[in-house]
Image (tube, rainbow, N blue to C red; front, side, top):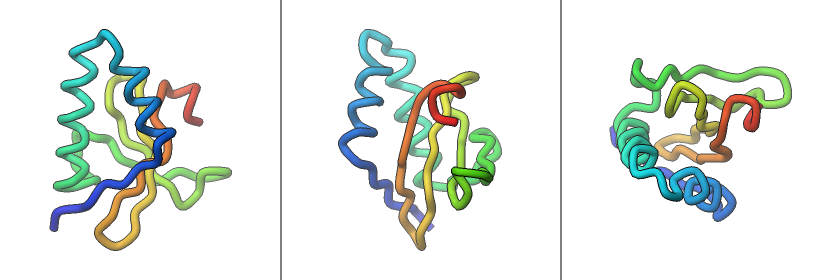
Length: 89
């Protein structure tokens, strides 16, 4: 099953800020989005369920420090936040 990815404008702005003047991050973002569409629990993404204030959400790793926070509903992934570990938790 292929998942649809949805995200608010605030998420887009954060992606643009992260990718600004960094072509390696741009490529990584594209690869992660493709993996999320195919399987949000792909082992390389290190996806895990969160708890506390972020219960009912998941986190996956984009790089060693950058995380993506999202929710799942049926066949749609709702991207909520992206940033460094300290920024998103």
